[in-house]
Image (cartoon, rainbow, N blue to C red; front, top):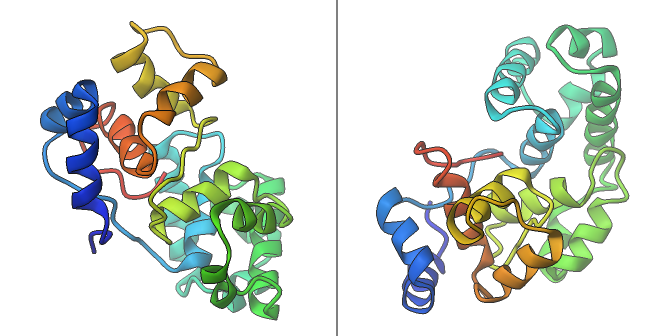
Length: 206
């Protein structure tokens, strides 16, 4: 389902930023697609940390096949050894089980999130083992469809900016933040297009 703000954001940014307008035209129509519930979105992000998108998809597929039912109760009961057989490191397996246990107990409660702004939610989620700022930002973009998320430490985002804005040179963090300022309050859309210009397949989850 398309985020309700997506079309407005695209029109506004295309009018404001000719470079982004060109990227959007080259990539063609598309939008962020929500895949999975909040638990699955966070779990997929943990699986995908520091590995390629293709590798993450392969590992996640094995987790789904072994679990059969990907929910907090089921994942919290899986053995570390079983998760490691799926291709997870020992640390990621521990993080995944800890996340599942926190959801199952109600310590992490998505019903509360609507009342939190982006920074408050990132801070709350970052207290969970294995959920840093990047992982929380992926949840905000892909599950909650928050419109103004800018994961400035994401390698794909920086590569997209390098290709289109900085003559192929990977920008510093401060340079990326400055470029992102021109995209407020729709930085999630601009980020998605920076990812998509590197991969013509629609970006659903990182």
